[in-house]
Length: 156
Image (tube, rainbow, N blue to C red; front, top):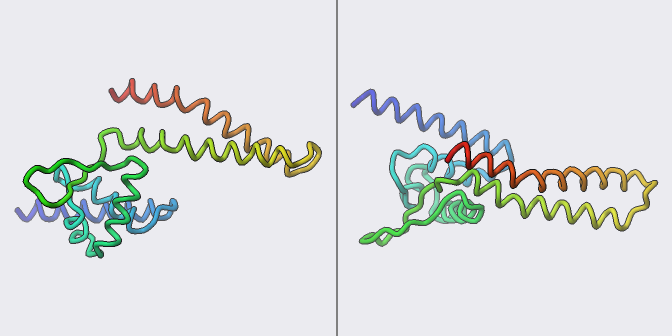
């Protein structure tokens, strides 16, 4: 039993390190820590209360983190017959779903670059930078479907 406790302690330390990496990458602190709980839990699903207890955090901050993770498609709410609490789990296809949802961000960047190109002259250095931005996001948006198809074939 003591070895199991040590293993869990090491896992939660790894979870906190992962959360720090996500924070350094720009994710909100509590959202990153909540995601780490979903990744490292040994349960099929967790409740907001269980996450709050694990992270020693307020219900409000956990609720906001859950909403953020659900909005981008990383987690999903599960039916929990007989339970008054809502249960959540990391989606099986979480990472592909997240990447797919980024298509809207990429499309928005593409549109922003196009709008900038429309109001700058070709000889203007801003026009050149915006053209490069537009070309990059256009390329990326065009490559995503094939990339996701290959991922599904490999993981499937």
